[in-house]
Length: 304
Image (tube, rainbow, N blue to C red; front, side):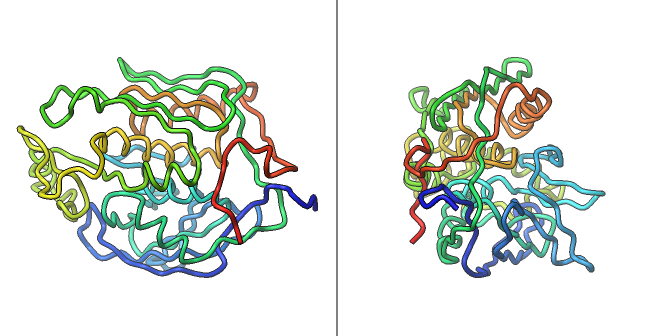
């Protein structure tokens, strides 16, 4: 092994937690379990007998209402994007995420609690080089006026623009850019909560959807503005959350991306289409590793 090589990581120990399922409103157990080299990220339904493993893979995603669902032979795990973004931010390559229901618990609607839990498990390096997907040429996915695109870039930069003509969404706070690293994600992105319109929520609950949704795990928006008493965590929290979603969605390619991502009104479905477009064009990317940790353009939290 090369001494200063950037290596794969997993957790040192199991971490257990629980929360509420956004759609079911029921308690969901979640356990983070260390996994072997090149094992990737695997979601495991422990409420089924025998348990069912579903790899976090862009090809297994089916768009569901308001979230990304992994589906294998009619068995699904939903609302994976927030936990995936936290796993990506800490540079974790191999992990089993056990859940006791068909969805990951929503926690507070951000990635913050997942970052905290994963750090409780302690990070450990494994004896294999960490792989990255380096974007080699521009590639995009579009749908009507929505767009998601990659271009070559040294590092991982995310630019996102939302476009809501609504009093709660000030025009100057509808675009944001971050240069991805553990630090920028944790401090500038991880705390941004998911958001929804109160009128949609009433409709959903009437149809037995989003039964767990509340102002404890989402930003509620009505005709005049933000409903939550505490207000926003960031003035541009809405667009920061879209960046959080994109980090999680894009990690489904199987490795961290090196490139620039531009999203305009994009969501889970279009982000996923972009990954399909990358995978179907082998000339658009290459797998790279770093013999010297200092030559990697993405900075991760140090493993002690």
